[in-house]
Length: 352
Ligand SMILES: Nc1nc2c(ncn2[C@@H]2O[C@H](COP(=O)(O)OP(=O)(O)O)[C@@H](O)[C@H]2O)c(=O)[nH]1
Ligand SMILES: [Mg+2]
Image (cartoon, rainbow, N blue to C red):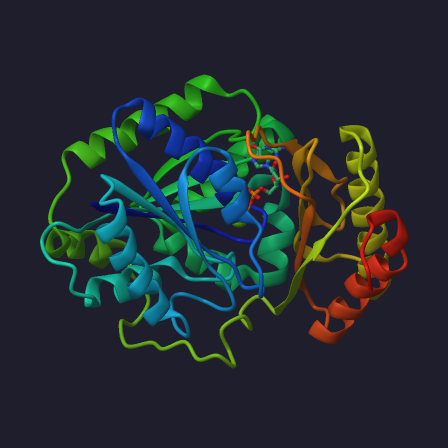
């Protein structure tokens, strides 16, 4: 089993890439499992990934590079025992430093059957300037940690921005391979070029001890650096809140879509009242008898994006809401979400 870490700030496209890479690897004959770590109490991405046909386990409530390292170890062992896939894709939270995750895994004893593949680091090109301005040091560190950097959301950039950001990334980490692409939009050639290089890397893989060569090339973090619960999200000053609800009374896809958009827009408006330039990820997953959909907002300037998930398993009615945003106290975030939902409890069919 080879482990690939797919990292990047909140909303950069990690889950989108996990699904796309996972499906590509399956087409190439690899068996694939996924571990997703969310900072909220309940996760959204695990549900979305599973509904897309990939074996997935969620590790919620914290960060797998520090507070949840034992949960990470237990879950890797479980995946190995249960599925023993050729490839395990790990999606850490958007505020994690992926090298820490890799170091934790390297300290675990899974035997020679488990080896580390590359760290794939995503950058949301459409927010590159905002992210560098807000959390330059932490974003720089995420780039430094990566073996392969994906400059994502190319569809939202002009050619000047694309070449400027690519130059900056190359300066920060000259050792990483850089691909500019749009993981969500149709961008066949760039994606295939990246995915095929990943397949070649997996086929020529080296044992776990061999990975240390790559670490020394890019690593600027002291290996003994620790991450404590108190400071784990402070590099980005992000706080998070998540909850899930049973919903009922939806008869068709339009009704669910309309409700989801109205709710996320209302939550976004309230967040904007406290932070006009918030960054992060506000997302919801709704699964009813008629439809499964994910809706996302990833910054102050985004309109909600809807992704319909092809599912063959209709649900009784479930909604998960997750928010992790910059520079807002967690209590305020919790109030915003709970107030927005209780104001719509009749429409959502939630008994409060
Ligand atoms: N325009 C555009 N949106 C994208 C692209 N890749 C991902 N997204 C959107 O960005 C949002 C966050 O993506 P997600 O994969 O959930 O990010 P994560 O938080 O890093 O896992 C979703 O609405 C995606 O549809 C892309 O290439 N272009
Ligand atoms: Mg995700």
